[in-house]
Length: 312
Image (cartoon, rainbow, N blue to C red):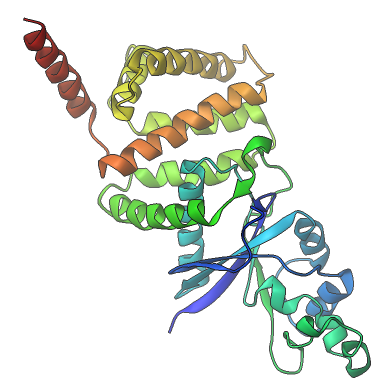
């Protein structure tokens, strides 16, 4: 029987129309309903099983508005699914987030536990909070996951809607299927989790480019030109020259950073590399596979030949 693990997602904001939890098995996304006091977390630390300091949980939860629940056989399996659905959300245009820890019970269940443990204090609670978890009847466990105090947050992309979540859940399922036949794609999924959490924006940008370059392992000469060409073709953009130029310019920035010629990457420059990675992931998802360099070149040349024949 699968267990359910709960992950607070920091910074993201549910849209105003969203009240009920949204189910998309094995995922469920719920709005945070209650504040969690320091006393609640101290109760968890003394009477339950926390594998991280409750003070860190307190700081992290100050930025939490939504919580993701995942049904999985183990915590490791749940974290794998977490990475997949976060990639799905990023493809839908949602900002990078942090899932700092996992718990065995939801935040709306353990919030107020300190007062519920006391018969006297329980009577003073809002009626809707009186039926949550108590220390006498359940043990709450928590494990660290993405314990980072740094994140490249895109402030104009914080809103999450039920529609975006449902599409992201479907994308997560499909990505796992594609990744099972092409293990290279794990590099993309991992980079989408790790890069935004690096404290140095320069190193974060290089991490994104490591994943982009891993998509095309045969590229060893004329790197900026060939990567730009392959990424433009991978995306099948209606404006391929624009994608080509943006990718080439972004790679040239990556080279200056890697060789110590730049150490002041801006958030806009970082966002450009981020969008190249997430856009590439989206293209792979829609294609259903990762084409090789030769396949992309064949697509490009075949297309050009057809265009010439039409012109004649």
